Image (tube, rainbow, N blue to C red; front, side, top):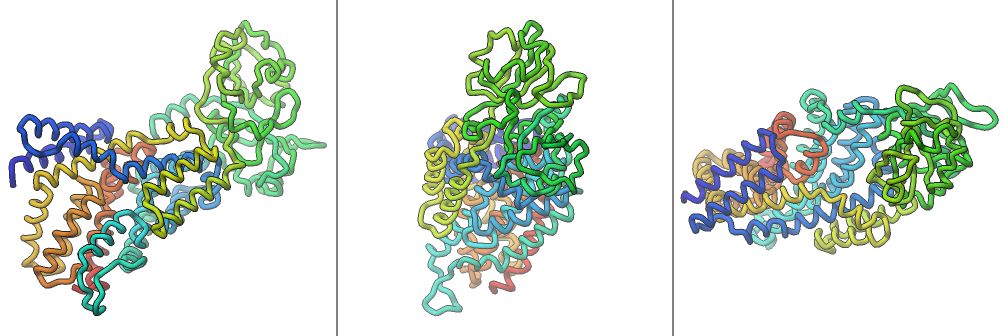
Length: 609
């Protein structure tokens, strides 16, 4: 093995150690490893990794596809479509295991027919909301989301890009099929299901059985800070006539177990409901629901379809047509404000500023009554719904000494939810029937989301997780370095030479485990491309069928759960879930070994040597 391969192996091992330490972000560590490889190559004039090859990873169709899928997910989020789908699938579970079951089962089924990357991208923004509503730690949901999407993906040809890659390699190799005269070995739509389905079922059972024991329960720093600084707001929303909540009880409408939010009463003619029974009280059109809760929960309440904030001056609801273009503002009433001493109704904030008071917080006091009747004091914090630019225009106002504009719009574009769903469905169909390349399809869907105003250009750019894209792109460069220096071929050749005399079952196990190792150091697709020709050559030299080896490579390249770099969806959930490397190892390593054992055991039975 040349010295370049030793240097490359040493740097990659150091990278893995740094990632396991968890002190630095994954994108910085992986890019740093690539930089070292380029520097060593230039200093020694050796072909280890050129700048063009490293940059080529960022131009990979996989990276561009993931970026576009983030934009598609933004469109699904901003229209409320994803929240509605997730609400139907997940509901309001009352325990961690119930939340995991309602998440894992549908995601596993969906990802068998929809590429797992867009599924994870769509669910990411929703899981935060579900975690807050149910009180289930977010860390117990994000990793199962990624794992379930991978497990479902190994059940069909179109479940993951890796399956398609190996199927293409098998077709290109044109290996005669001994069972079908004149035919070559090939993957059909459900060929891999004979192995993938048992792996998926066992994986789902494992996650449900051991999730609460092995998944971390820590909260992310931002979540800890949010709860520590939580302030209690009083807010009111009106139930619209076309609201899906009409005719349902508080319990059925999902308003009973809202995290950090309490339904204190319902203002209803002719008599208000002061003692709300969640299981008996039915929601009626025109009801004004009065809540007390922390700011994030109040903001989340504004996203519900069919609920409108109550105008502080007229008692009527705000025009829903304009709400998606409005912004949420936190403003503190100053001591010299002319508003002090007036009720919110008397202050005419809507007339003066074009803003509606959604909620009010007063330090040390639990407010009651109607929002319009609250008499303002210095230091009161108001949550306002106002046109963009409110903070800039009123920065020097004597009425407010502090104003902060939140990033999210006041309400989703509910009227465009059906458009977003149609765009997503079209993307799934086009990719599933192989009418368009996945990258082209994702780009068309992202463009359609912006063109149809399901999201704005600014929202699309803000929704892209650039750190994840950097990590994925840089990982392609490391895989190229392993190929350039011969490290990958040397390692694979060494172990397979040792295993070949031990028989086909041992050889199959070694091929599977080597694919796992390369998946950790490279991308899953790159690992499959690297191992396929090696496995085929060994099978043919030993007079064995290449089919079981192709199946093993396909499953192994996807079912690496013990590290965040084992699959791109793992990287996608690592930041939002607040995970460290060892969290994946603790929960994912047993699942990785379980999938390996099932695959190595079943494959020779279904696909004989």
